[in-house]
Amino acid sequence: MPELPEVETVRRGLTLKMSGRRILRAELRRPDLRRPFPPALAALLDGARIGALGRRGKYILIELDADGLLLLHLGMSGRVTAGNATLPAGPHDHVVLTLDDGTVVTFNDPRRFGLIDYVKRDEAAQHPLLAGLGPEPLEPGFDGRYLAATLAGKLTPIKAALLDQRIVAGLGNIYVCEALFRAGVSPRRLAGSIGVMRADRLATGIRPG
Image (cartoon, rainbow, N blue to C red; front, side):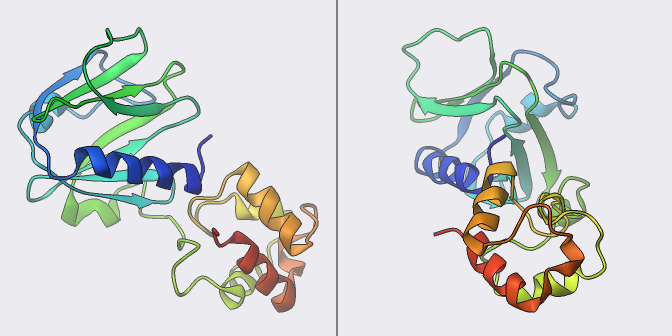
């Protein structure tokens, strides 16, 4: 499952190819991935101008026109490529966007655990996939004090607690294991017993870079 660093890398790469471009044609080659596509999604994408590409947790957020937002989650096997149209479409190329400079953006997902959704930008914070997410690791409010306060009283192992996207957004299994190792904290330690000193080390270990 792609985690925050991988998703951020994909976002940056797509920004170079997509931001400022217009979608000439949107082709949906099936009606769903993990969940059905929004009604009339192809019509919403056709002709849309692409703005900034953002990220929230493991979701890529693509601005469309003045008020649209496309939510994209890669799932376990999803990947997005952006190139020319010289290669024929593969059997798992489920969404294909042709941009006004000839770039072809393809969402490929053999296991179909990814998802694509559309929302108005001013409603994004209330979207069920985004509303409950915790802070990002690089946000100013994410530190040892926050972690200690949020984990206080929790009887789950610290590894399981950190995988809860409501506590901190974007972490996955590998990311959490590496952060715990750097902080010198056992993954089996109860989350509520971390304390401020360990929480400080853990917050440092979680921050990318």
